[in-house]
Length: 72
Image (tube, rainbow, N blue to C red; front, top):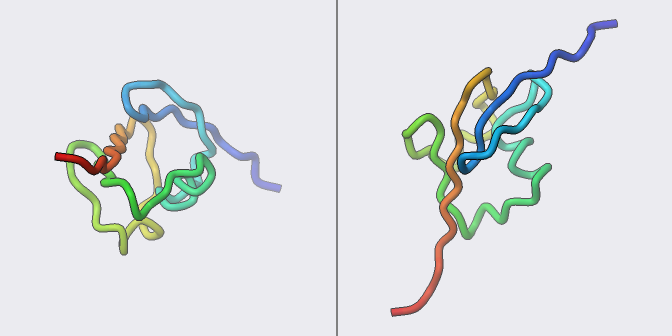
């Protein structure tokens, strides 16, 4: 049985420890991020939401989640 390895990432400036086999999409679902209302940036690059499931998170990745807010 394969032992699950842990890695550290930063999300909105906060350090988080996760399993190393998570995709970006799986992680966002796990922390209950409403994908229709946010923009996702990984290592200073905005990510196309259609590609979230194909991106595996790696040690020291930096994720920024920007929420859209209405108003004027």
